[in-house]
Figure 1 (spheres, rainbow, N blue to C red):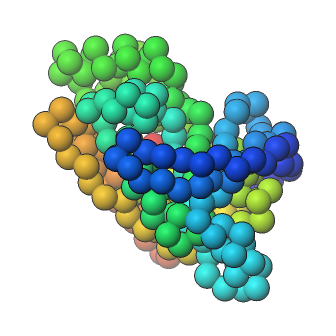
Figure 2: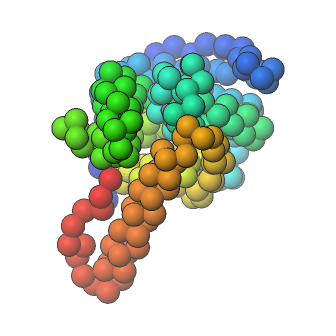
Length: 233
Ligand SMILES: [Zn+2]
């Protein structure tokens, strides 16, 4: 059963023209909200023919393409090569604009541990830990991101069904648990560079671990056994 979701409302919506450093331009309808559970200033960006996508969805048609993107100041703004967030954000904006849908810009920096802690974790990674081990060494969760506010925003926008633009199985699992109908997972591209190779390898290994745990859980459910442990994240 989906968890009960507190109701959020739209606070402001405003049109913002976007121009990326590589010359790509589009226009976003930027929504702000009241009542998001964590009180953070998350944004929803309606891209392309998002209004038409909402009409089609309401008429029982295709679900819109949606990407929840967690804030990464170093990657999104400064083009850090330690991760692939900047190119992923850029790709997501264009792919969503082409079909009409929403990018949810979530203010949960550094897998939810914050900007300073993320940079502390980078220092530990330089000493040999991977991105998850470093967070744990700092006394934090491997990944503290929570998609409750994302689910609230989708409910407020009138998007109960999504095609989810994400390669992260945890996002799909959390959103489903929160009552969002993920009808399809659309994988993001891989943006490999010498500086982010270890990071991407750790991310891929973690995704495989989550998928394997989900498969075991699904098999247990099919066999009538209760899962012995929650899926790790
Ligand atoms: Zn990043």
